[in-house]
Length: 404
Image 1: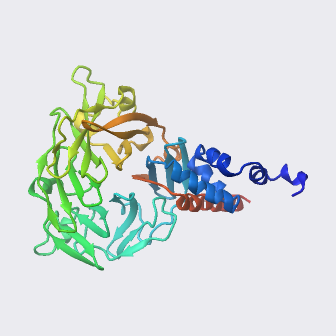
Image 2: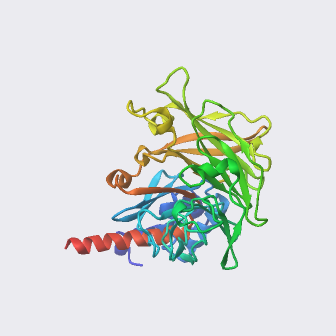
Image 3: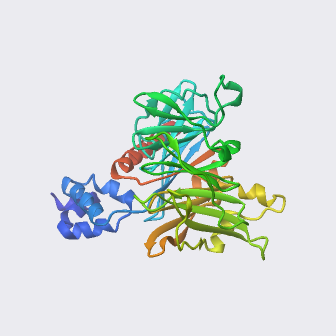
């Protein structure tokens, strides 16, 4: 290679001087968004990137926000680098602003589009690959809880009252298996008054879907393999909490993380967000479990006090998404407020929140304030990142062409 070419070809310079262990040490410290570009330098760099990720895996999930309106965008936050990546969503066939839904999964949340014509599920966390198409559930649903458990799709509640046939109920439960939807027992009685995704917080593990009433704390779980419901318990470790959210906890142990938000009794303008570990099998607090409180400055930024808004109205807006290593708490009614990352760790007394970290709002959320925002949580791999960068590059090229 001629020396003169090195000044105009930075990847060539890097490839010339970085090799072996030194290269891997450098790559271990790069944010994921830069790794997706590094793999294109050479085959050696591709192998080095994969080796670096095996030696130091990125354990925390990404926060993925799908903005849906006149334009469709996917915003992905890398917790290691604190960088937002913006791509453009390959919209499913039935994707309209009102029917874009979230599919919970232990392997990473996805978005989907539900209509009477079918159910299209995004092929990856960023929505940059082809969708997976299924038949729509037997019962027409307008606001269901959707989840993937193992190789089974689950649709719970959210049925349209006006479209119910004889014998069907709003709280209907169905499992998609071998190409067909199978009707199961409906949601437990304590959850039927709130049998819709708007009023239920959901978490999916490798074996079950957990549902928690956001207002009352009543909780139950559904096992799609056995097609049965578990016990129903009222999880209210703090009676002053107004709203509840649930996310997966310790992997392989059927543990949950229960989040609650309330107004401080002594300072009415101060919001307190707490977390507890819950034993999934029996739906009880883990022995010795103590609550972990989010720093007050973060909770107040998430839920700023509005003098014209009562406590109950404000508190319904808490949202949680996560996996066994951590996740995010956000204000579902005001996504432009930002979010808070939480990281889990194992201790003798159980799973606890090791740290909280503020996540600033992506600029696109502020710019597209009228768009509908769907929050998801997932690990993001190199393949998704490469497709995401390609989509972002294509969009930039198209915008430049249109401008001329």
